[in-house]
Image 1 (cartoon, one colour):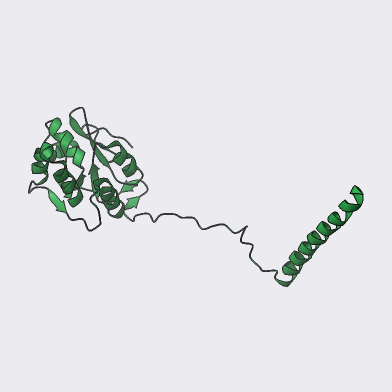
Image 2 (cartoon, rainbow, N blue to C red):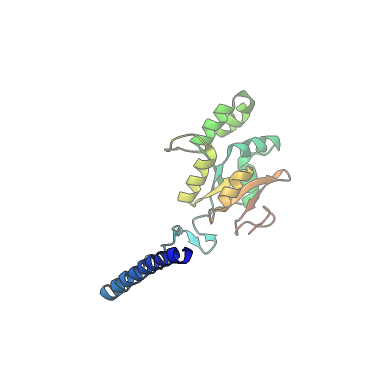
Amino acid sequence: MGKAKKAPKFAAMKKIITKRAIKNYKEDVLNPNKKDLTKEKMPRNVPNVSSALFFTHNTALGPPYRVLVDTNFINFSIQNKLDLEKGMMDCLYAKCTPCITDCVMAELEKLGQKYRVALRIAKDPRFERLPCTHKGTYADDCLVERVTQHKCFIVATCDRDLKRRIRKVPGVPIMYITRHKYSIERLPEATVGGGMLKL
């Protein structure tokens, strides 16, 4: 009884398989130039490389350097008793212009009375003020977005997460504080005396 029931099922499956095979064969014969989408490779998502980059060297960078300053960099400079402009010049041996974005200024204003000295330093007329057109006032996103679009800046920060994000952007050097002085990372022109050279 069991064998008799199994036989019709097997025959029905065999019919379905042969129908599919015949259908595929017909399609292959009628449409020999048909593209197989499963075999076709998906296009690679490759970001556009800036024209300022020559291999790993950024040709858009050169003295006078424009340095984008982060909130915590100003605070750590105060703690280490470092003058921003003089410290940058000692590190790079060239004229430097510290740049403060609207987001960094807004962040310093939000921090309140405790950071009033940092806010007074940020409002220094020697510093270049960069207006922000985007929504929100999160300084880290603002700085990363700005250096991704324009590779003519050095980013000054002591924030580990921001450093990690900036390192993913090719050709953007990072300035940070070490041993009570400024050091530079990923800038081939920087001499070892001025800052710790890390390539």
